[in-house]
Image (tube, rainbow, N blue to C red; front, side, top):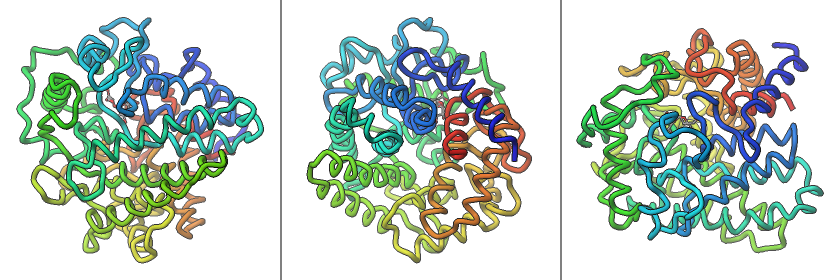
Length: 433
Ligand code: 9WN
């Protein structure tokens, strides 16, 4: 375990450097704009440095919310050159192509979304200093926006028709090249290789990143959505998946929204009712008792995706999970596929025994800090405090030793991806507190 004061200083330095004045970039080189779920995790850590800055982080993101309630996955910084990140604003063209869906006119964004961690983050930021939060009217301003965000997901994204939210692009669940998407993506015709330039390869090792074929398919799906005005009802959505992690995060955030409503003297019951409905749908539709974890579902094929992704363990953060399901998840986490408390330092993003496992390539095996932070919370919530303590210690040691890297080899803890990554620093601060 590193010296807590040294760790705190180093994490603070990363967050101060990555702050741009109104929000935080995930990393200056690879990701020079504001990302949606990154900002939620960053705010959770920033609250330990400055509650006002943490509030600002979330408010900047939500200021770019669309009229239909969606919170875009990227809010572009207009001072950053177009070639610094791909796809850039001239690809998404949100303010024109997205006008009918209510895209803002004064800021450029992407048109897809990321997991709804924001209400959970807003509640944790509020709890860090409730008096200051009340004085600044933080929850009063955020509540309608967060409610509209969840309303968009529930109202526009139940593509499977069973009460769960679907993601329509591999960038949406935030686990871009998870082996779970290989099957659903194989039906997508890739864009011409020469029709775009991958700026990510200017900053990251190709072996640590998605392949060119993946990128061709990402581009095709995003362009199709754009060309249908980002209107969900009109877009064919060749890729549609129900992801247990996204739905679990929505449930946790719906519980947080109930707490926010309660703090504001509003009625929490609609949020609790939605959380309960979602929990029922999550268990009945995605739970696989034989595998001992939740599976993703390919909505277009009408079938479960038989791959073990860490997304299937993340429902441990759901408060009202049936006890037998929670117990089975704890056993699976500690078993041969994920190695918690045994073979690995941190829980991998994908099955250690899976055919597609690769300890270096992005979401196909490496361990990520946001995922491990969520699992740490889930372990604590479901009666496994010793395991949570051990994961916390491993997370802190690995975050520090890896230079707050984006992800690590799950066995060795060796740094992968970019360094000085904001959510790694932010969540280390949160674990320290
Ligand atoms: C595409 C910013 C984001 C994270 C995602 C991670 C990665 C982007 C990319 O970086 O995705 O959104 O260009 O690869 O997969 O989880 O939010 O940190």
